[in-house]
Image (cartoon, rainbow, N blue to C red; front, side, top):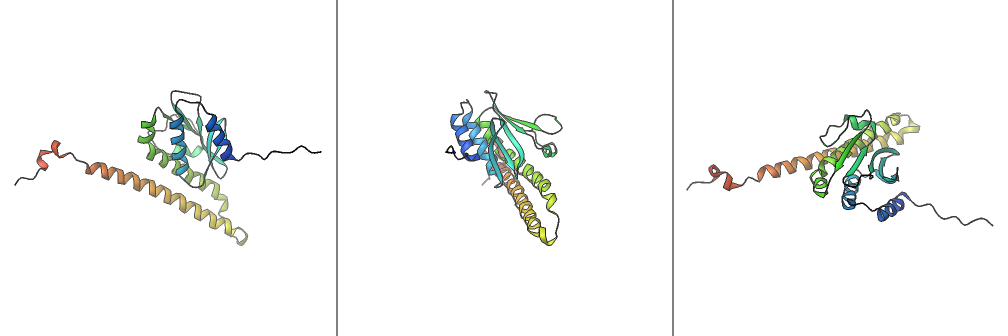
Length: 189
């Protein structure tokens, strides 16, 4: 008689179980970063790889948590395109990866928009690389050609949305001028 087989867990189930069992002093920060990363693009997927939450696009790995340190949260961006993305948050001068560190929830919140921008640019770069093979416009590959253009349009829209959000925040901060510190702005009657 054959042994009964238990169904394999999905990536989502594995991540949920991992996070449930995780004992880390910055677990709230880790969960906040997970949400920020996943919100950056609808095609991003999460799984457990290298014994930590890891994020990929169309099978291409992009970023993984390194949770060995307990005093800070460490993200490893390991897609080669990361070296072409400029950000003061990205550390290291490696030929194919960059690091990012968060010490507390305040840093997570302060750098939320920057992390989203980096993720959108990384997904856009990964999408263009994944989809270069889909440039064939022949009738048998037409569906792949259309898919490529839809995915690239979605990635560009994501970049534009993040940039618009950053611009809006900058404009809002510029409008908040304290009148007590600016006596020359008071109207004289």
